[in-house]
Amino acid sequence: MPTLKLHGLPLSNYYNIVKAALLEAGVEFEDVGTAPSQQDEYLAISPMGKIPALEVDGTALTETSAMVDYVAEHLGGSLYPEHPLARAQVRELMKYIEVYIDLAARPCFSEAFFGGTVSEEVKATAKANLTKGVAALNRRARFMPYIAGAAVTYADFATYFSVPLADRAAQKVFGWSLVADIPGFAGMAEKLRERDSIKAIEASRGG
Ligand SMILES: N[C@@H](CCC(=O)N[C@@H](CS)C(=O)NCC(=O)O)C(=O)O
Image 1 (cartoon, rainbow, N blue to C red):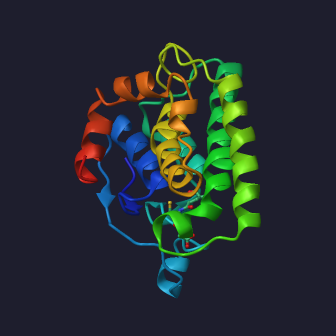
Image 2 (cartoon, rainbow, N blue to C red):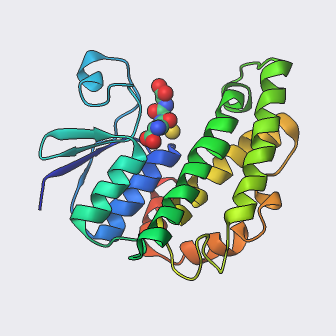
């Protein structure tokens, strides 16, 4: 088994997704506790200075989807479906969450979480993008009870960690609860919280 070092902090939805994948794989890893940084030392590991990053025997990987794929393909405990089409559908859902929910909400984060002010134009764009993103996700989501169907997948982790963050920003800036507009989210989240991986992560971020 390779030596694994995970860089990141519990406040990051992306870090929590990768950590959940590692915990599900049941592998040992060092949780380094790194903050995002533009220092050369960290840029050598994570060229954008973002968290998470995963060092595998000294080779650094970034981008959550790439890290999750590596864990699933090489470390065990894969939560991707066997069937290629079903697997592609899980990756599709993960991409929706990342691009059309998380990235759509991020322009509002400075006002929602860091005391900044965001222009009305940026807010209007973010709201329009999030409206489309939530509608698109709802068209694809099955929530039976998991987002891709009867079996838990990495798309549930992406949903579980990323949607509530975008939701908090949307509530603060627009007074709009994304979670309330995604029927099935609450039931899926309740099921996920039964898992040891999610319990451990919730404990690490203070519930
Ligand atoms: N596309 C990246 C996104 C990671 C990301 O946005 N990380 C945030 C924390 S949740 C970060 O490090 N932000 C600090 C920065 O952008 O400098 C991934 O998939 O891992």
